[in-house]
Length: 130
Length: 127
Image (cartoon, helix red, strand yellow):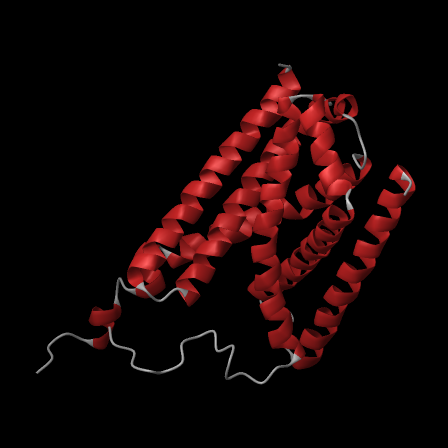
């Protein structure tokens, strides 16, 4: 099937940026990032099957400044994809397509994921100390 | 002279060729399961911050946790694999690269999920 040079959907390059399209792109980006998160989860679980030394090393890698930075990103991605996923389910049952609702639920997703990420890390620091 | 109708020519192509509705539904079914499982997992993982292996094994093997961890693993890799497939279908237009990428994603997810479940079982039953 020849499609010529017509731009193919999704039109990332020819679409005027706005909160709805931006959040949609971030949904996909966080989804891809979370595949990396799943692999980190597998690494974490599997490391414990290789004994105390290997698990300790995994914990210290994940607890290093770089590990914490990655986990901070993963935590945000997880909350974002979760909240925006629920937004998607609302659309699937036909709710929330009006522009004011789209903007409101979009901002709610951003607030929720940002706030929960901060809260989660605050709890983690309270548990583990610095 | 074209004798076939427009519908006849496109039927069985694009997303309909592999059951687009089935894919769409399965992706959302896993998503529904992931809502409570993810919240439970974040809560649990935070409690394991800085844990040693004794605490970690105690958590993995605690009543109910192995089942929740295995469900989480299946739902994550199942949902992730389907999401990646859609993204590859959207952006990888070369037919060979598209096929190879989708096969790798699906087999890779299947392998990682199976290995993770094996590790959860091993941590639960010792060894």
